[in-house]
Amino acid sequence: MASLKNALKFLSLPNACPLCIVALNPQTGQPIAVNATFESILGPLYKFKEWEFANAASEDDVNPQAGDEGGDEGSDDGGDDTKEGDSSTKKNRSKFREAIGKVRTSLESTAMREDNNETLTGKIRNVEMLTLGSNNAGLPIKKYFDWTIGSVQLDDGDDGGDDDTPASAVILYGDMVNEVESSDRARDAELIDFFQNAPIAMHWLNGDGIILWANQTELNVLGYTPEEYIGQPIMNFCPDEQELVLEIFKQLGSGNAIADVPVRFRTKDGKLVHLLIDSNVAYNPDGSFGHTRCFIRDDTGRKIRDARTKLLLEENERSLRMLDSFLSRTLHHVMGPLHALRGTCEIVSDGLQQRNINENEREKNCELLDRAAETVTTTTRMVADVSDLARFDEGATLRTKCNPVDLRDLGLEAMEKIRFNDLRLTGGDDGISVSLRLVGEGGPGAVHTDRAALLRVLAHLLENAVREVGPGGRVTLQLTSSRAGDASNSVLVEIMDDGKGLPAGTCLDQGGYIDGKDKRPAP
Image 1 (spheres, rainbow, N blue to C red):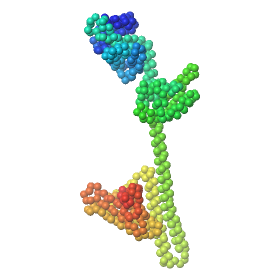
Image 2 (cartoon, rainbow, N blue to C red):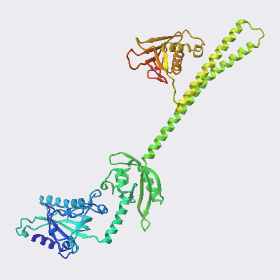
Image 3 (cartoon, rainbow, N blue to C red):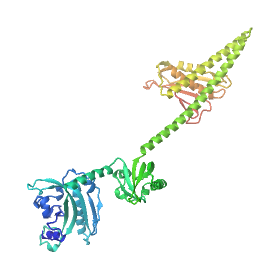
Image 4 (cartoon, rainbow, N blue to C red):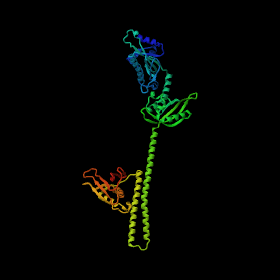
């Protein structure tokens, strides 16, 4: 123990020193010597010697500012160079124990090297401690201390042969924080927390574009640590926007402020993030460039909204072009029959105006009127199709009335609705044969469906086939029933023809061409 006292004397820190001094065993962390100031404020040695001194710190982090300024640790070569540690997520006692532990660990590693001059020192502020000697009654009272942590190598020749005395000791110098300073630190810590954890990223840049300071929010956005980010050129983190960054500095250097400037930054893992920058300049008293005041907001949401808007606009334009094309074709098909109908009406009118009408002329006029009626029927159906399509495009749904429908009768009725004179350029059937084929042994002869809707679909499919086959071609409507016992009770509708068809993979509204053959199942 004499060697410890000699060590304290050697460090010119006598018992009259206003700092609380305690020496710790580096192996156990327990106090082995204290000075008089320590005993008067924190309490006598016997109250602490049986337990690790770090436990004297309060466990609950009731003083939040301790984490903002604490944890200053660093290695030196006889100097006072320190490095700020990240203790924002550690509690009061954990930070204190960690700071002491680093010095204890350095003593063990130093003892194994021949060069014993390199030691670790540290400093931690605003540690709440349980004092046991600052009042006459010895009641436990919590106060705040700034601790400087060092170490001392004891002289082996001065240990008096005491085997319990270690070869080195951890020395702590504690300065109790007065109430006024503690209140000031609390206010400062609140302001520091406001800037560090604000919901917006902030940084300062000097005139050369070097990052002087950045808050924790910006570090979180980009994924860097303070050591990796602060002190580096801002260009390193936005390599894709170098020309833009130079233009920003040009504007700021001219005394202008910038607002809502989109800049792409690269995160630590290489991902691009879109950010918006607002900035102006804080000038030194002599008018020179001091530093920028940069506020950064995430621009990803706006970029996504712009991309969606652009996509919707392109889709809307495409839909309008398709609608224009569809209406143009539809009107063409409507105008053709109407012109024919007008011509037919004129011919019939001229014929009826003749006084003497023979039987042949009467039959001819009747035939023309029948064709006009068919044309009107076809045109009406086309207009109904266009109207329904417009309603479907607006979100309307098809309302069906399902009843048992005989397949054979349905197929024959669909074939009867074919009007060759409206489908063929020659006005006749061109020798085209249309047939019905029923497939399925033991399957149902009827299907439960909406007759009108299915008949409409079949008529369109047959008309498509008749329109595309060559003279003398064949068109077959094939209805395949599911086998007896099949729970699906379904019917496959196929239109097969020997026309040229469409390229494989081409789809129509109601189905598709497969291998050049029209095989479009009805819904």
